[in-house]
Length: 118
Length: 116
Image 1 (cartoon, rainbow over the protein chains, first blue to last red):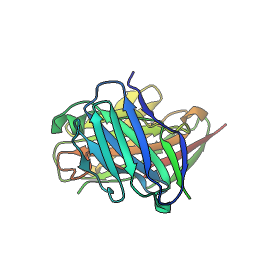
Image 2 (image 1 turned 135 degrees about the vertical axis):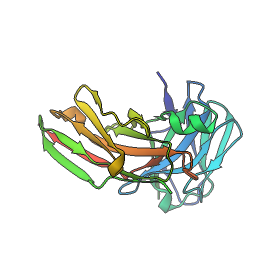
Image 3 (image 1 turned 180 degrees about the vertical axis):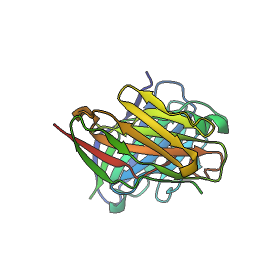
Image 4 (image 1 turned 135 degrees about the horizontal axis):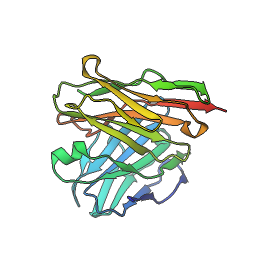
């Protein structure tokens, strides 16, 4: 079974802090994704990565950066957390490097990190 | 641009009732894939099904069935004889070659509550 784990289920940070959200997958997937989920807005893609050291902006990258130094690990960084970044953050992974695989293969999700910025 | 609309924000049914979750999509691509995911209270989205745009056959898996109609751009999900364990948020999603910044576009989700 694919397993995607996220470093924390709940996190509370203060405005202006630098925040790291970590995601690890154990199935050698090429693609990894970070979403945020907000009530009434569904899931919105922040960034994704289709290979080590590669990253692509999603729909809402502002205020975030990412790092993928190893294939199994994809980190989301909030350089200076703000209250409007309070949200549920979901990490996902999927198999395949080509564009065809990127749209065909299902994504496997972690349990999410509920981040509160005070 | 790709878009997925789940018009039903919340649905509440009594156990053993049948329930249909609606999904309408928009895309100009001829090759695309449609997905349904389930998000139980634990928070982790679980993949349920994928259909490609060239296969309009309906699919049944136990109490779950899916109706894909290209003519109406819909991919509806029916749960027969609902159970309390079906309570979750259900997301419909679309992926296509020209998805722009987002390989997978999600609808806003439908929260289903099944009452015993």
